[in-house]
Length: 259
Image 1 (cartoon, rainbow, N blue to C red):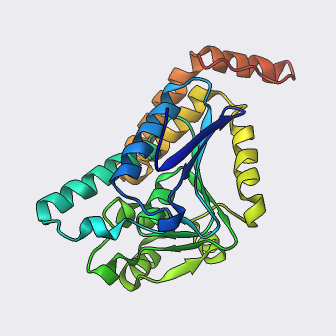
Image 2 (image 1 turned 135 degrees about the vertical axis):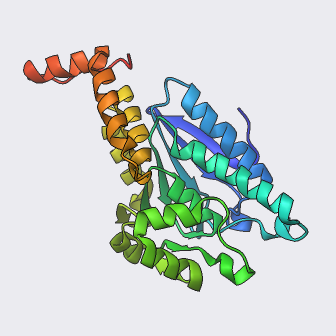
């Protein structure tokens, strides 16, 4: 599949999506959303792809935000449609049954921070900066940022970041729980790939079930526990579970076949 605003590469069962608008600091526009959505569908549908990374082109930015020029003449209705569309694309990332890591190589601001938070977890280079500066435009994050930032860092820190529009550095983001690892720029993709290399050895159906069950942690109505128990039972009937149990008892490495 050919893309104009992103790069798409697959090696060792890992897909790497690179937002490729370095002259615009990889800002999100309509074309990026279209192609990002297509790339996520490609990842999910292709059995040889087991996991993925999203990163940005160049050394300055992961994604420095939305393309502000596209917001100039929007009315309330079209603004809501734009936000809903971005939310849908990011929801598809978050609900992907295959792990998708954000490898953040610079500025992750506005929609870029929201994109990073939609990924299952985040690895950042030590020059990365995070922020939701939408209040400086008289706006709030529209692609799920108010919800995911609060889930990740807590209500107090989230409201402070949202209401001030301030940026935080990679170490602060790590201390807040926004990112899992901070490494040098040269170590960024190797670190993300090394984590995925481990995940790719695990039972795909079990990984997908972990992702799905974790989505219920924020419902606060107890359905997550029921989902976890039901998934546990279903997984016990899979061939991969039987293989994993037998391999453990036989003291050997399991061979999972995604069934």
